[in-house]
Image (cartoon, rainbow, N blue to C red):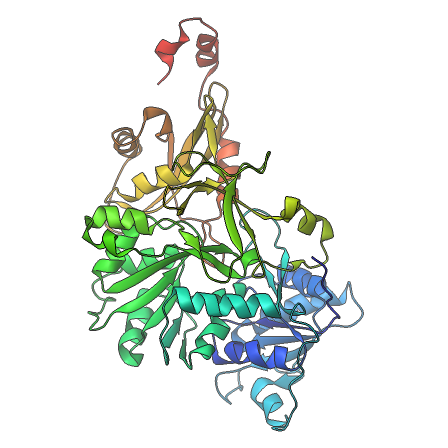
Length: 506
């Protein structure tokens, strides 16, 4: 886990625009390290990450210029030298933009470059190529260091698992700041691809670009797939060709996968983390599964599957003993990885790096089972398991049932503290436009399809807090559920002490 970062970091703050793609090649070829910052962060967090990454240059999109200026103002109070600011613009029209603090405009900076510039190649394959900050779903973002070797191997492995042919037309829905677009920033180039960049991800934008540019491949988190599957007829277009889609980031509900397939998309489900350079596993589709009923096919496709060709080893282990769990589809363990496609470590955080690679394996924090065919299936995040009355409840299993309700657009289940049961499931839901459902209807719907102890005892309707990559921020919802306090009253707790208390338990 030893690596060297020599303060040649170049940061970006931009959506998926052509310059962002170009910088994925220009920065490493200049011998520097690319640090793509989340374009949806506020000025305070941008200043924190600029300071942590030690970036010397910041390329900023003109729409985010005020955020960058705010960040640099805050940074100037803590450091002596601020990064050089380079502005990315869509055209030469800057009449309404105050450019007093701008050192360069992107296109003019390129114009003064030399065509005969010699590429600065890494001294070692293990040298850093990029620093990617985690999305912060559970804690403060960490700087994940990718090596040239890891990025190269994962780029090619992702192309293979997606079965990407030569000359693809790729639509950029996945943020390039997220694990370098799951390493497809480099992977698409390896296949001589055409990149379609969009600033705003919406069903209309996606369908319009697919038709206009004859898009053949794209990526998207399950949230984006949900958005497409539930889009209005006005936004939707009839596709005259199949579009291959890679999805990952969180376990996709089988219902959403099925709806996407019905709309002309072919889904490849991959699984990984920023720390695994993006994809680490994928659900390799077996021909014998083609004859299964649609519902069963979608359920299988939702599995995280098997390791891709670039990964050395994948296993599901008991983290306390490091023993592999049996391949029975029932015993739960933690997903662990090792190989060259793992991160080099967390930038300036040796303790967190050491903890993540304890016992020689990268600990994902995800809980899964292993099926008899070797395919793994995520059951929950380690921090998301709900322990109720001594029973473990998978929030993902409850969410899958909730997604099957015709009125539910988005669902997230977290633990609510309880004096009697320890914890009970608390469901946060966003309903589809034009649909209604009440709390008791949702609870009864789950009780009809799950063991009663797994059904939510609390249901709250609201918009979901999300990360920039579309993941629902469960840590925010957990805090809100914690603030609700116990759902059980003092009488319930007294009843539990009675010997025949089982009559009160569900």
